[in-house]
Amino acid sequence: PHSGTVVLLEAARALAAVVRETGWQPRRTIVLCSWSGEEYGLIGSTAFSETHDELKNALAYVNVDVAVSGNSTLTAAGTQSLDGLFAGAARDAHVSR
Image (cartoon, rainbow, N blue to C red; front, side, top):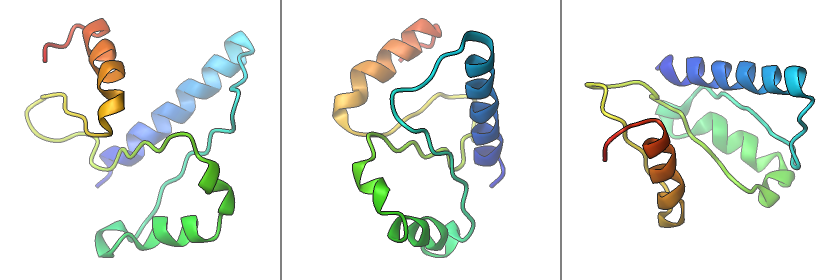
């Protein structure tokens, strides 16, 4: 249950480093969230989304729950429109499909 939190914290650290070292600013607000209660019916994320109307304009949602598992096989799931993006990132990282 902790691998998703570790990945989220590393993403935050990497984003902060890019901003600090290059001055880059995202075109949209980036919100990083971590919830408890997910195993009991998505309680944390549901409560958060129900009280934050600005999420209706969200461009993307990335779930890193159980980010590390199994035998080192890279897997991803999402909408089919993201298939090319994921395949390109895997190719750039020298990961075979």
